[in-house]
Amino acid sequence: MSLENPKCNCEKCELKSLFFSNVSQEELFNICEIKYETEHRKGDVIIKEGDKINEFIYLKQGLVKLSKSTSDGKDQIICFSKPFDFVSLLSVFSSTNYNYSVTAIEDSVTCLLDLNVVKRYAQTNAMFAMDLMTKVSHVSDMIIQENLEIKRKHLKGRVAHVLLYFSEHVYNNRTFELPVSRREIAEYIGMTTENVIRTLSEFRKDKIIKIFGKYIEIGDLKRLENISEFG
Amino acid sequence: MSLENPKCNCEKCELKSLFFSNVSQEELFNICEIKYETEHRKGDVIIKEGDKINEFIYLKQGLVKLSKSTSDGKDQIICFSKPFDFVSLLSVFSSTNYNYSVTAIEDSVTCLLDLNVVKRYAQTNAMFAMDLMTKVSHVSDMIIQENLEIKRKHLKGRVAHVLLYFSEHVYNNRTFELPVSRREIAEYIGMTTENVIRTLSEFRKDKIIKIFGKYIEIGDLKRLENISEFG
DNA sequence: CGCGGCTTTGATGTTCATCAAGTAAAGTGG
DNA sequence: CCACTTTACTTGATGAACATCAAAGCCGCG
Image (cartoon, rainbow over all chains, first blue to last red; front, top):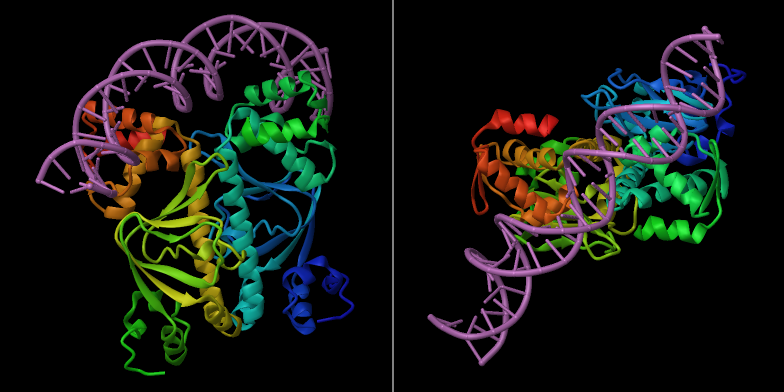
């Protein structure tokens, strides 16, 4: 183990403060020693549904989608995930194989650790295990809440919800570039592509949003929030 | 601490083998010392949405539903839970308050442990923490998978799915008593009560099931499975 | 340049929610 | 125990929401 290992800059990584806070400097070095940082272009598949889980992957930079393909060849999008939402965490401790795919929807950087090493540390360092659990629990909860929220809304409310999600939760901006296609929005909210497009056009006609291809500008935030809540 | 404590029969409890396997006999006695076993009648609310989380509750016997009420006063059912599916586990490690309610849909028995004590053990016993995490992770995964499954189906497929769920997953029998009302099925699959009833009636007319009030007998399993998969 | 995928709009039909109205069952208070 | 109220269940009629089908324009890419 070399302290000069160029890969080994984890002690500066934001990850440390998030869930390695109970891992000693020395342990961290050991974990870093076997880590791989990988860059992914928009569209790259990072994890393929069905693959064996051998690693502990987390998203350092970018944006990804979790999805699952149905028996009739279509895709369902489970959620979108930002850095530190630990995309690979979900099945990691309960399955041997991934039961969904992870795809970059923006250029992204992942950090890959050997799962067995992480597990070994978790089995000996209880505080670390607890931090992991809190994270797993929180991420799962978010997904379940979000799904309930979408489920109770109609088409317009769902589309409005997604726009607000990207605007507020991902980009913190009234103007942003949609990282997903209309079809992907449809796959996320469980409606057809055509109806997503029709709804966006309608919002545009009603001057609630402006559309420039992939770019969206929210013009009337209150109305959009109202549609999301009651529409 | 008394070994003759009448409450203290945890060492015989099935729970032990499930996720206290890495807890020593002595630790188990300490945990048992502060446990409360409670009986609930069908319909009783065990956990109320919004309540502070002070305890670690698990289902020892019976059947419950997890639900959440929407802003417009209706209910959404998140999942049904059998013993050892650890109903209170979900939010316990990520929130201070429950964000759903738990209600007995059959006469049930819960076991209540002090959350702080459980947490304290988890923070010192890494193997115990890992077992907990595996459980949390697995339960969450099941809920997410199940929701995706329902989402991709139409009315008939969803109703068929629910019938098969109770028949195969809960009762292991072609004949069973529905533990939920038609309205609750509707709240679970995200359709209206009327349409759930209509679909059940249709299945009856097509001789796929027999209905005697709450009792259901699956007559044509293959057709029901087919409807669940493709209908 | 042409191909495939993404986007858009319109027309049409299906699926489902809503409204209405009635029966059955189950709980409630005298 | 019975009248009363409420809740669950059931069916039909109607209209709204949404999927499907079709056709055309657009854009990026080999």
